[in-house]
Length: 131
Image (tube, rainbow, N blue to C red; front, side, top):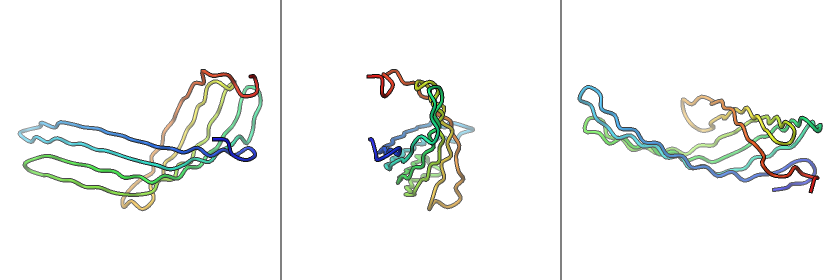
């Protein structure tokens, strides 16, 4: 979504699901995890040339995570709600390829550590201003 000036605001929705069957030394368990998130990112270009744009962003999301373990020895079902602050810097090359390192910081979650990631995106559309 376009914002005012050089800043843009983008809504963000996320869904993740993972499952695992464990069978080790007589211990069996079915483990599932589900993550739902909703929030927004705010960012904009701070430097731009025809070949490179630097686009920092900050995001804020609400996250609900549910973990379930089906086991005879250790059954468990737990759900947690927390916030997530995301800081990122996008490096856009030739308006086509974006390299985006980021850090995600959980807020309101006990014993949690930040996570680090890198995203790569390719734009197959027509660059802005060339239509």
